[in-house]
Image 1 (tube, rainbow, N blue to C red):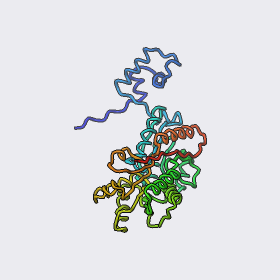
Image 2 (tube, one colour; image 1 turned 60 degrees about the horizontal axis):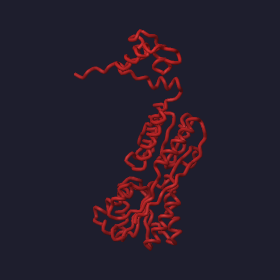
Image 3 (cartoon, rainbow, N blue to C red; image 1 turned 90 degrees about the horizontal axis):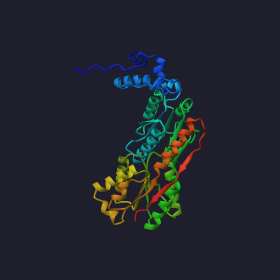
Image 4 (cartoon, rainbow, N blue to C red; image 1 turned 90 degrees about the vertical axis):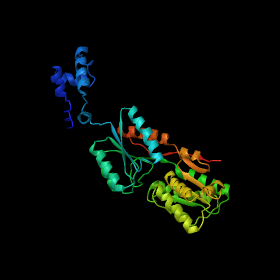
Length: 339
């Protein structure tokens, strides 16, 4: 038989085991011994009981008293996404160093699931929620911000006055696309993007169009494809393009590294990687990954500064927790041109 679950020790239990009052025990546990001149012997008596029985303070009771839980909720669309993972890792470390606990949840890019995980975070009385919105419906967030502040990262809802933080993607994409068209003398360039309803999808496509215009290359509607940001979508868009053309396109730019993963998988499975090696197909992507440096062929990329994003997001979190207003921010990117 399984051993019965032990009853969690309470403040009353410690008082009975030590023969002290609840008030004295509470002052010791809350670090107020010196202030109220509680003797070292009494402090040691409480410490021994706490260690022996594994006492843990009731976080919810303390939160009710302090009107703060020191818990921040983070909702990301995909925990396997390299960029979101890097941002979450740095943000968790910053929170931990300042006595805050970062509770991470995943929306799977599903609006209903995003609402569900936000509700679960609100049940845990988080002090603030950081989210990358999966949709543009402002009505739900308007209800949340009445009692819990929100900070948006990577994506934002334009109709809301919720502070947001994102990479300044448009000008960097425009510059990279122009450079590629001129360097490889292209007369064809395909774009594979995610959900067009999302703010980064629109700004990244805008950068692509600007780059073509600056390079004096007129786009056709058939060059632009959108699905979602999953790897399988990159695979499917590459497959559709090759089947439609009866050949590989001259160049492909993906709106996210996850889409490039799908493109590379398609090329590998269909034995087309030699075409990239000899320059018949040019590849580029928004967002970078260290694996791109290990490939035998070139994939030009735009690197998001995820540590900088996390640091700026943390400053926004601290300001909002103190009740201050904060401005929307754009973080610079870095173009990685692989020679």
